[in-house]
Image (cartoon, rainbow, N blue to C red; front, side, top):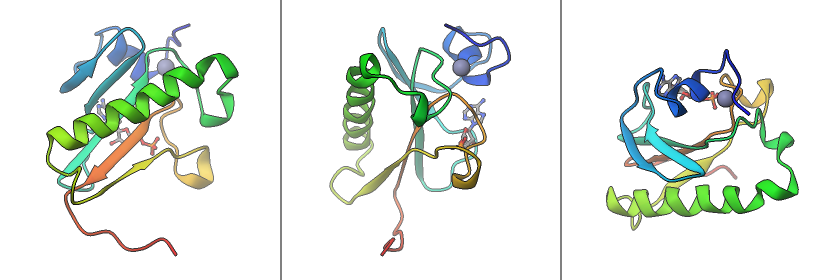
Amino acid sequence: MMSDDCIFCKIVNGQIPCAKLYEDDNVLAFEDIHPIAPTHFLVIPKEHIPTLDDVEEHHTKTLGQMAYVASQIAKQKGVGATGYRQIVNCRESAGQVVFHLHLHVIGGRKMESMG
Ligand code: AMP
Ligand code: ZN
């Protein structure tokens, strides 16, 4: 179900342009408009799922597909071997700003250990 005021739903249905990297029936990948690293793209489900906490069991295949697509594109972009992050921000404290589930893929520079 699409959400009328959701920027990523508008990207899915073509109302807002994006630099598309991959698309199939369930997922879409495109460049982040404000990259925080040399590689920074997003992988989203086409379905409007607001947060990671709204994922239901029937979405789990799509989530796996998102992670797979992310790693395939990371390889194509040449960061697969050096390393990259796949991050989902869930709700405000984590920094979620767009409430349509999205996987950030960030690479191409050295990142600090999270430990
Ligand atoms: P988050 O803080 O996890 O909600 O991340 C939202 C991300 O969406 C940010 O990295 C933004 O730069 C990115 N973003 C927002 N609008 C667009 C857009 N129109 N096209 C591509 N990326 C976008
Ligand atoms: Zn949406």
